[in-house]
Image 1 (tube, rainbow over the protein chains, first blue to last red):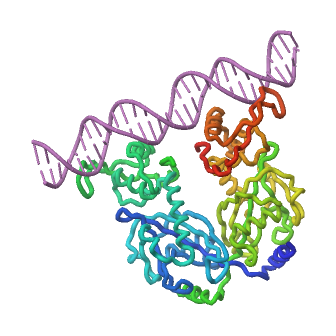
Image 2: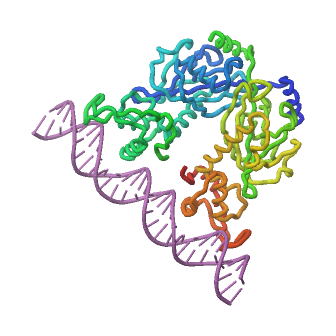
Length: 242
Length: 242
DNA sequence: GACTTTATTGGCTTAAAGCCAATAATATTT
DNA sequence: AAATATTATTGGCTTTAAGCCAATAAAGTC
């Protein structure tokens, strides 16, 4: 404890007599595409884990960033070209072993965005890919990024349960079946059709726009819907139970 | 971005060519006492904010701590003598303005523990107090700790709604009314008596231990209960709706 | 035209919450 | 001692929402 107070004393003059951990930000960006949930990965250009796949992320720039969310957003924009309006902080992981360079702390953010091909908006990173979550296990990712993605995935499941996120990642207009499939994908479980419709329609977050054109295939034409104006304000309506 | 890759290159050799933010951990410890929700504050012994009240917390010790939760637990033990079995990470706040020494990041943890007088277990800190949440607004706390406490308080509300935390902070045995009051205090809202009893009793987390002795006052004697063995395993039973 | 596929709706059952009042057991007051 | 106040416990109802399943509707394909 003497050690501790000595530190605080020295800190008074902004002197570091001890090492502090590396601090970084990582971002797990999800999207829905072709009926799959995908996560955006980049290829690392530098050691450690050079050439390995990793989540986009990086260090705080003390002269540019106002806060850590700004750091995350800056990295997100740089690597995806998209300024996600919703950036959710998931958790912070820090320990002695996650980075071979030493003690390291990272704050993980998450976003769910509409699909866009990576080639169109990735600039500096040598290669960025949308990796289907199902193929993830086979990859060897940098650092503890497998774990980070699991954590973000869990948050996405929970978040979806009490929000209306999927409304904003589907191509418009969409049918209620498509919307339900999106919810099921994100939540990782199947939902009861009748209950789903009741909830969604009673919430008055949608308005019907088309009279009923089928989209790809067979069967009775479905009503086409779009999020109604202001539905962004109601992102945290609870949509479904556990 | 050249800047960025250069950094990553230099980091390969563990060289820092740029400043990194201060990184610390803070802990908001709550308890119930005399029908009030209280938070544990300490008095800072060093600049900045010397002599101001603040949350307990501090910096990572790279040679001692295995991870940031260990840092939090080490600080918690040092300042309260209690090893909280449940330490919940609330959020991480980092920006250029929260610490006069410069860019600073802190990860906030939270715990709810049974009441114990501070004098008994606080050692190094000159003075530690349980501050009633109602008196908090009048205090001028160090850094952004007012905000941090608000964030922890919000988490405590939500956490209580889907857990059974209060079972473990009440003096045993307790009555169902006492338990309900604890839930109401923590959740910041009143609950319906009948519904409360149904939920709690159906969950089979309690067993009746007394035949019905009144505790302080008047009225019909109430049944006395204790958490049943193993109820710690069911901490995440959803107890009440929104 | 018969069959398949998907969408939509109706009509139940079931589960749980909310509401309110009746009854019970004690202490306090008159 | 009786009346009153206070708190606890229980019963019974209404309301709300979920789950289940089948009937009907509107398109396709064979």
